Image (cartoon, rainbow, N blue to C red):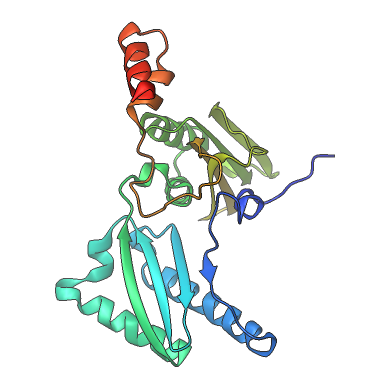
Length: 247
């Protein structure tokens, strides 16, 4: 039997940082954990259209720092930053303490698995054929620079009477390799004939040993050497890879 494990939880502490970073006494742990969930649920519900793949939370003794990654920061900020101030007040009402907001723009949304899964789910809700929706997402992500990708759909695909599973894959997706920079995201498509689950895995390359992913850098950017290795047939590409390696 195959043993399944969450790809991000599997890599926590090695190549993946924690999404919530704080310490608490045993009596406060449950309350703060519930607060984190309320913060994430509130932001996701209020700004569902702004493309938020990830929300990180850091706590100090007197404040909560909420770091929001978004593909469309203009929607979240609002005119003259009014919406941000409103959101800050709403989060302060939830946490009963000072809240600091930080926004990070996602440069390459095609390489964020959560956003890709939401895009496929939205296409299914608009009654697009599921095979066409998955192949289009695969093509867009691979063209953006991914090394590999896998999409899995579960539910009444195409309005069929019996639920089934559909998988599409391209390139490598090394789930068991800890060094692999693997992004995993899910979404739900609420169609007229039932709920369809969407899972997306995106492999972006390997991480150097001992280093964690820096999400503040441009997501999915590849070096010249990486691009050269992906095209070994081109002599110029091989030369470029050797020059970068020597440097």
